[in-house]
Length: 593
Image (cartoon, rainbow, N blue to C red; front, side):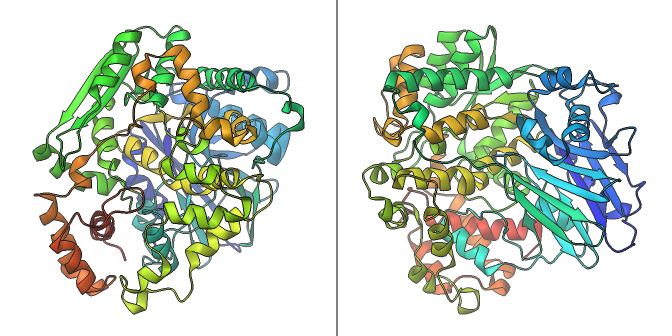
């Protein structure tokens, strides 16, 4: 896991090293174990910050070149690199034991189709001197980020948005459409937009081919259908359960590959507990597991240690509980906001940031359960969709997911920031109405998994883990498991109030108390029910001179929220005031907008 950066200059111009070095300097936490830069091609400069996980020697350093002049900077992990290496060894000589070199040889053999042979999470920039092109590649589920900025005569890319800003010359004004998305979908701004006009995201499962004349082309290389497969039409519920168990076991096994120890973020919920059980099956004795909890607030409990302790005892893990008091938590928010590539209002972002700090003192790689809810219909808003007609997907989803309607935003935003049309609804409609999804729930799970999830929780996990040099791996987002789940009858997923097929699997492997309880989460009551010092923190952010100069929100609306900070909740029970304040805190912390 690393940070990548680069500049591509067009039409005979020379790429500059200085902006690349500036971007690398802004990403040292993503790669504290080394750095490298390559610009021999003249019009291409590639940079890399290294976190050593596979091939810890200097031979695995990047940017990496091969004898034919290919140059590569890469962030991620290729879990099947050993199998690919064995397949490629009859044709190629290897000088390292790294997965990076395997990518180079795979491209040498298969060209652009190399991506279909990779199993893992990856953000890749590859220079091909023969074609005079640079390929920017993002993994199938967008686990690893690629941010890009188009500047006069050049393109820059990096693993984080703040790194691009640090390179200079980037338009940091706010994008009104992205603001509409942020306020509509609890701070999610899906690719290709970001909250800033001058920075975009490469969409998941995309290869962007950038040419020396400045032209470029995107190709989406993977998207499963959410339809029923005739070859599985005779499968029973037990058959599907067996198939999911086998695919999840394979996903967990793949993510054990490392030259350093691997731990687990154990919330005590179904998803992370299943990972611990499967790792125990694989012989991972003495596994390190980590949980976090907080003080209660507003009647909400602040931890789920009883459940994580139960799993730790059951499987004999070396378990560490981190309890963070409110007095300790408040000062940590600024660090979490600083680690965000984009503003993320989810209450548990700071929880992940604090937990990963503790984890970094013991291990460099963790597995975690993110993505299971999106893939296996685990959220409450999935339930109405299980019985909705296919044509009702947009209406039903919007009613249980959208934070603020377009009409609501008219009374929230100052006129200059208000979009004339409901741009967020148009995006949802376009995705939900696309063929390839049989039912309303199929359509929403496709939307969740391939558009919204990429920017929450996947981005949240990447940002907070990489802030402490931790590589976080997500077995539930193994692309073959996702393909299988996409073909699975939606009723099996939505049963038992969500994730029914996983709950049945858990009953075979876990203590019953883990399964038969309300859905868990990383609880952060202090940000769901705002009290001091958080109310003052919110007020300071929304009344800061920068906020007043920016003038995003109508003062009367903000004053009404501040008068009763906990009165307004989103459909997913988030605090509306915190959502607005977090945006201002992020803009002020990163000095943009």
